Image 1 (tube, rainbow, N blue to C red):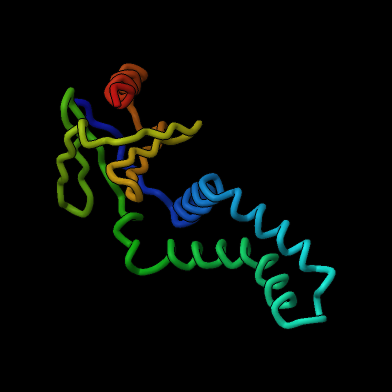
Image 2: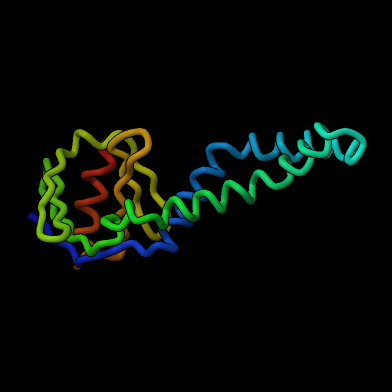
Length: 152
C-alpha cells in the first residue's frame, strides 16, 4: 500500500476549478448571450424587453461567477476543505478525512481530468475528488498512481 502526504484544497482553488469547469462546459452559452445582447443594444431604452435583455445578457457571466463563488464558499462545502490523506493499492483508493476513512474501488472512477498541478477523479457526473500531483513521496509512487488512474 502506498501512502501520500496529507493535503487540503483551499477555498480559492476550489472556486477557481468550479468556475473554470463551468465556463469550459458552457462557453457557447456565454458567447451566445453576448452576441444576442449586442443585437439588442441598438434598441436599448426603446422598449422594456430589449433593455432588460441587454442588461441581463451582459451581466449573465458576472452573475454566474458571483453565484458560483458564494455556492462554493457555503457552509455545506466545509468538509471539502478538510485535510485529507490518500493511500492506495492496485484495486482501491483510501481517503482519510476527519478521522473517517473512505474506501473507493478504482473501477468507480468514471473520468479523470489531468491538469499540470492536480487530477480530478470523477465518481459521478457532478462529483469529483481533487488530488494534487505534489503529494507523493517519490516518483515511483507518482507513477504507480498514474498507472492506476490511466486504466480508467
